[in-house]
Image 1 (cartoon, helix red, strand yellow):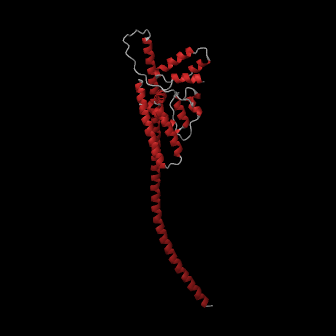
Image 2 (image 1 turned 90 degrees about the vertical axis):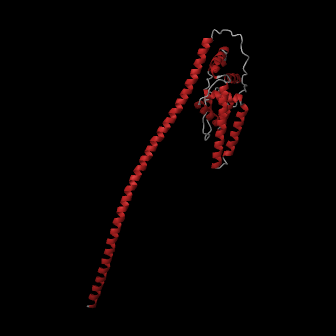
Amino acid sequence: MADLLEIADELYALPLGEFTPSRDARVKELKGTPLAAKVKSLRKPSTAAWVVNLLVRREGGQVDQVLSVGAALREAQQAMSAGELRNLTRQRRQVTAAVTTQARRLAAEEGLRVTEAVAEQVEATLTAAMVDEGCGRAVRSGLLTAALRTTGVEPMEEGDLATALAVPEALGFSATPREAKAPGPPDLHVVPDPDREAKARAAAEERLAAAVEEHEAAAEAHDEAKAEVERLEARQLQVQAEIDELRRKLADLEDQAEGLEEELAEAEEVRDGASAELRTATAERDAAQRALDRLG
């Protein structure tokens, strides 16, 4: 497993377009050994995962500092008030946004333009690393094949983390730092390359595959956002209909209350008249009874 991790560490440090041909070349070198199949199974990282892996190798100290801040914030979170938590969340977003900007700059230096959709995945991965210890270990390995996302409310299961890693046993592994390659001297004696067209086609296919992957991610994010808007619009219409129905019922009840108030006033007048007549009749009855009693 140590040999597999070492090979993976080398492959995932390569430029994104070189991953597949370099991996296949290592498989040929290892043909007939137990490692060949394992190296062959190493998945090409998504663009966002590659950018995070690049950041870990080129700016490992800064990533460690971010993870340390995340650990300290997790410990302090329990004793904080709601206001402090809001400030903490805002600061954490500022940190991840700043590191994401740096990661995009590093990727640009490697010749890769990072789209907004990919940058959002990179920032989500860095946020997950800050709020979840397991995600932090996965990021530090430098062997991500997919972006991470978690709210931090519940820790991410190791099984879920394993699916986002080139080697499931990579948790606890630390990527080897890599320096940016210095540009070499210009080659004044250009030797014709018989495979130039094939290499150019392979590079174009790699670029197309990366662009298709970014497009699919952007389309998926767009569809999710559109579906959420449609859901909220439908719910808004439903709530508005319920409000209108309640207002109609309220108007009906107010009319009924007004009518009952008038009927009650009339009933009270009738009651008061009946009470007066009852008192008069009672007095007349009592007087007649007394007159009868006197006659013996």
